[in-house]
Length: 551
DNA sequence: AATTAAACCAACCGCGTGTAT
DNA sequence: AATACACGCGGTTGGTTTAAT
Image 1 (cartoon, rainbow, N blue to C red):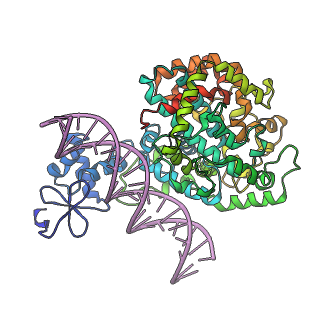
Image 2 (image 1 turned 90 degrees about the vertical axis):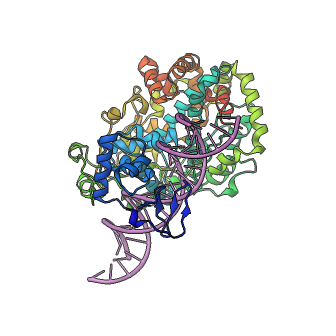
Image 3 (image 1 turned 120 degrees about the vertical axis):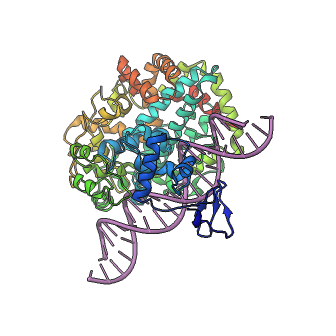
């Protein structure tokens, strides 16, 4: 080792390590730190070291084991490849779905997501997601499955509503609020993107998109959708926003929904195969487009089991892992594309980042002020939301409105237009009223009950019942989220739900999934699942405005 | 069969945060 | 309180494999 030390000029990298002229690091002891692929010998050394000394203190590995790797590299190698219980192989359909769900809630918090996926690493999840982002971007398909988006919104609303109730006592709920915010932000962007590509905007009865965002600043119930003012702008990258150029973001940094509305409304039915009830059936063009989409983008990384097995352990880089589990795992995702299908147009990063700009500070202050003013009259807000609703009270009550079976997720894309918005109006089956939310189920259980596996080539879920059609009317309508159905339902459920949510959130904080699980099992699932826009009205604003990391 | 493009994945890099001194 | 260090996270890069032409 020592002999490898070079006397040449040594640079220092960001971590203070010296670099030789080939870019290899040089430890403080003068040992050249190797870079690049790990060898089996190095793996063995590292494994042996960890067995003896445990994890952590990674910089000591090089010193004590003679391994010519920096501590950071050792940690990464251990975490991603050598540590026990790592699950290798393609992601299962369940995992794919969970990833989408988690991403909807957390954004690019790979490590946190990995915590929910035993045996999976943040890097693995990140790679998986990013490859699909790219693919979906090219295909113009949704980022999240509709039910994931909707559910996340619901949950975020629960949380934010709770935050509203705790308005005067936010000190201990910073995380929860932040979490809520993140959910909102991510999903909101997702929904916005959908608005840009989905035909539903026209369906928004009494509010244009800009009214949702901007007018809401004044007194609407939609203010909670105003994108963040928070500094987490790094989370979503511009690269995830392919559909809309920055030129469509108004000078306030908000996404000009009305513009989208105007531009998109005329294209809606035709472009997406989603037909207005007043519009004749899908055009052949849609069908063709959709079919094209299917044929294009569906080489998912989730490969059939056999392939998954094949791809594993390609080299010494991969330690032996328990492939046995794969043998028993569900058939590879036909679902292969399950996630891809829903990767939607990227979030509007401009909106996000811009909203955090100083120029919006005043707006946020106003929002906060009004939020506090209004928070005491939540019911009043609900009433107002109700008035704007286009749904009848009875209709929205069905919790199924915002739930889809996982299978539908895949089918959704499969049937959708090239833009990912399939003819949901016709094809989505109704979900049972007691359909579980994603969070109501633990990962291991999430997909057990209602996932219908499809073979990769299996295109279609055949619409065959009226109730299916019924359900989709709401589900497919992203704008519905912003509109009145939720508010309508919320009117009835708001009070009790808010209290429950508050209590749970207060107790559990971070783990919103658990929060909602508990809520659901407490017999409030029906109401909670229809928790709507109304609940995300002003009482939510504090959650946004109180973000601890606000400047 | 050869070439090119796309997809995948391991590893690296920079930065932020927490902790020890 | 200030500084240095260790660690972890998220983003990016580059090499390899696979698929398409």
